[in-house]
Length: 276
Ligand SMILES: *[C@@H]1O[C@H](CO)[C@@H](O)[C@H](O)[C@H]1NC(C)=O
Ligand SMILES: *[C@@H]1O[C@H](CO)[C@@H](O)[C@H](O)[C@H]1NC(C)=O
Ligand SMILES: *[C@@H]1O[C@H](CO)[C@@H](O)[C@H](O)[C@H]1NC(C)=O
Figure 1 (spheres, rainbow, N blue to C red):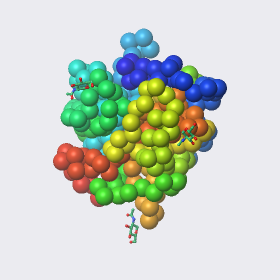
Figure 2 (cartoon, helix red, strand yellow):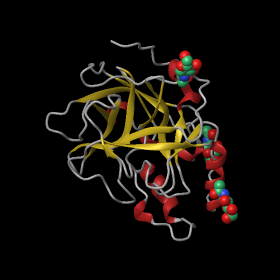
Figure 3 (cartoon, protein in one colour):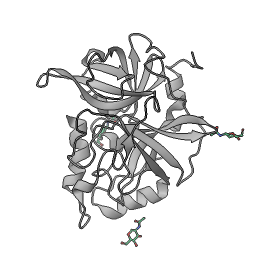
């Protein structure tokens, strides 16, 4: 898939000396998630003819019982309609017997997302409307930040997903959801690190947020999933897993779509939800 290539290609052109490729994973260095710790996490599925099943493609999060937030690059090519996708909510393990998939009835890609630039072009955010509400027993929506929220560098936040454990190291069965704590990296420093390092020089835009450290990061298959931070005893989704360089190299934090930049856009579609 294109999005996968997009994430892998920068690795092939890596110009950093001595990059320990296999050490840079998706959810790298994390721990298995205790039941119901991240009840908004969902798995976005795409039907695989080869595997004859709805295959995990990306992560996502419930922001309302009927709405999922994910990354626009997870929904490529743009011609794909809603019927090409399903959402699995409420399961800690992928493909568990009896898992229930929700139908997607509408895809809203952010209009500024440019698929020829891919995730690194920005506005890598999309909404999926589900056919029916996810019942509370299978999922609880996460809070959205205030549009003005600023996230201090070095704050510890959490990213979850079923993505690779490292470069070309897929999560093995039974595909249990993983979590990892990641420190926020300021945009200026993050931009410096990326610019410093490579001829690709993707710029870190204002609508992006960086987080992660060596051995703590997100990776292929985590895309679209949530980065959450805790304030005042409430979990708030501040990022959507978007792109990065080879999952977990010291100088390359993971790059997320900054949710606060898109709250008015999200609110123009998703009704307020204040609990059951
Ligand atoms: C998308 O990016 C490409 C490459 O920079 C550019 O040529 C094109 O005009 C952009 N498309 C839109 C709709 O902005
Ligand atoms: C950028 O590269 C220079 C020279 O190699 C180095 O001194 C500096 O610490 C690097 N900056 C970052 C943010 O990695
Ligand atoms: C947490 O609570 C304090 C005190 O009520 C408030 O000033 C602050 O804005 C809150 N932080 C967030 C991120 O909501």
